[in-house]
Length: 295
Image (tube, rainbow, N blue to C red):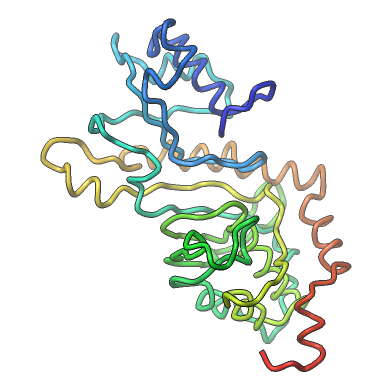
């Protein structure tokens, strides 16, 4: 999502399209601080989004801004709509929960009969110290404490002849690589590469473990929730949600995001290669576990 000079980014394309739609004046285009430009999340390279929220002071007249912006955007970037917000709105901080989805190719699970997806759900849910599920954050850093609301696996779906299990993660906020590490560890458990006690072990502040990180390809940001904001300003401002855009969003997901994930997996074997590496990797945790040290 985030602008990156020299690289094509969603943010760069979106700013350009809004400028060409006369929503941003030329005198402000060079310095987006002038229009209070903010994004709710900086999705990483290779991570898609269907529910990104961007806030800015935009010129919305003449009518038809959404259509104009979409004319100037590539087919894999769409504006669904806009909502008036308060003048002190902060897209990132005012969001009280986020939902991400990860499409896991069914072959990745190779689940052993005694493993059941429900067991994983219980281990991640709640407030924990997730320092082992991110990069460069010390265990004692208060930022490592995060609240996971739910971690569930949906029904198998078929995309371009390939079967996937959508894993849905809902949390207050996430750290860098956190969701990919939650999914990677879950897959490693399902495949019997690591014992399921790895989660409990990794969530302890004093333990240091290199948790497996799933590829970026299957991950996408699904929705942001502004429950507290909507409640507070219900009398003066319209609801900030995906309400009314459900059909468009579903269509975009099924016609753009899912096929992109399936086609790239088929072409590059992203997950297949990662799984191959997963079997060969040695996690310090195993050594501790094998030596029979009581965890």
